[in-house]
Amino acid sequence: MKPTNEMHLRFLSVSSNEAFARTTVAAFASQLDPTVDELCDLRTAVSEAVTNCIVHGYRNTIGMVYIDCMIYEEHTIQVKIKDHGCGIEDVKQAMEPMFTTGGEERAGLGFAVMQSFTDRLKVRSKVGKGTTVVMEKDFSPRPRHHG
Amino acid sequence: MSVDLKLKKDELTALLDGEIDHHCARKLREEIDEAAEHIRPRRLILDFSGVNFMDSSGVGLILGRCRLMNLWKGRVTIRNVPEKLKRIVSLAGLSELCDLEEGVSVENETDE
Image 1 (cartoon, rainbow over the protein chains, first blue to last red):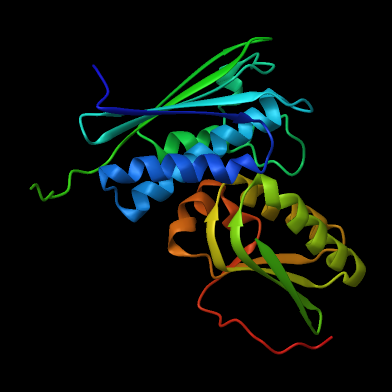
Image 2: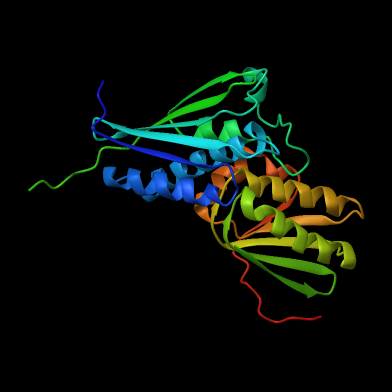
C-alpha cells in the first residue's frame, strides 16, 4: 500500500533529541486529527524507542537515529525508528517486561510501553548492525468536515 | 523540567514539573537524592501534579527512589498522578512498591 504522506528525520543520538523526536512525530501525526490520548500514546511510544537507540543501541558512543513516518489511509501512522548501534542478541528476552541491561535507573519497560501504547509493533535486530522498531497506530475515525 | 523540594517535619516533597524523560531524569535524580541522602526523611513524596509527559524513564526514577528510601526504611509516596500518566504507572505495578495518593493539594508553606 502506498502512503498518502511521509516524513523522514535523522539526528544524532544525544538525549536532548528525545523531546525533539517525539514532539516532531506528534506534530506530523496531528494532521490525522487524533484524540489527545492517542497523540499522547504515540509520543510516549516514540520516546521509548528513541531512548532505546540512545541508551542501548549506541551506549557510550554517538551515532545517527533515523525515523521514517508514513500515513496510510488517512487514519494509520507507521513510525519506523532505526539505529546502526550494537543490536540486540535476544529480542524476545529484551521485550520481556522488567528486563533491562540499562542499570538500576532503567525500568525495563520500554518495549512493554511501545506494545501497550501502539496497535502493532515489530522489532528487527542484528548484533553489530543495529535495531529497527516499526510501530503502527490506528487513530479512531472521527467526523471530518470537507470543503 | 524542574523539581521543587520542600521539607516538612520528616517528609520530603518533590514537586515535579514539565516532562520526564531519560534526558532530564538524571538531573532530577541528582537533585532529589542529594536532599534525601542528607535529610534521610521518613517519607519521600513525589508529586506529579505538574507533569504533562512521562515515559518509562519516569518509572525508573520512581523505582530508583524506592530503593534509596529503603536504605533507611523510608517510604515513597506517589502523589497526584494525572489521568494520562496512570496507564504507565499501572503498567509498572508501582502500587505494590510505594503508596499512591490523590487529590492532595500542593502546599506552598515551607518548614526548613
